[in-house]
Image 1 (cartoon, rainbow, N blue to C red):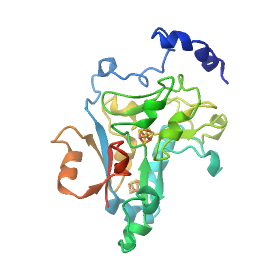
Image 2: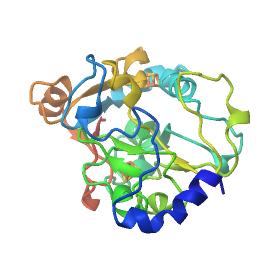
Image 3: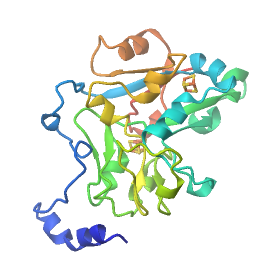
Length: 258
Ligand code: SF4
Ligand code: SF4
């Protein structure tokens, strides 16, 4: 275990008294909009995505993987080359796995057989946040569910609590497996959990998530779900959309047009 995290465990008593917090990576631990220093930072009450799979599929079938590749490059996501140790922030699942409770035997073939883009749902009621003993995982006031890598002690309670498999664990030092290092983004270390952050580093400088920006099909729409005039809300109003496992009450902030 890394020294900093071992020290953190020693500080457990002080934490209980609300006295101790380890220094956090600037910008990543901010859970209060008052901490946002960039005047261009986007302000929202509940950021979310609407993913139009009908727009994505033709490109995906033609080999487009720009959202995945860009996310990997932007966030220094390692390619371990081993499914069991895979670190994934945005990936695909078959319909039956992504929406197990929303299928029937006579479903349209294109829906049943096509892959669905999945990522952390930035749930409005995130069970991962509820179970984290060190508060390494927290929800910002704008709805983004974050992990402070410095506070994560690798207990993986959050992974057990997430019903979407949206979190990955670094079983080994990921750094040797990063193909193209982005020096502007932190790398992680062995023993910490990670996942999609909805490109918080971009939102806090006035830019949409990278997957939204690079998609040539404009299949992913980003917006404030609490703002009735946002593009995302307009899509939700006018198109039929579904969420993953809504019956669990986590209130995902990622919606799908199928
Ligand atoms: S999808 Fe999983 S990791 Fe993401 S907020 Fe929901 S419960 Fe947490
Ligand atoms: S970049 Fe757009 S079209 Fe390409 S795979 Fe991602 S969502 Fe689909």
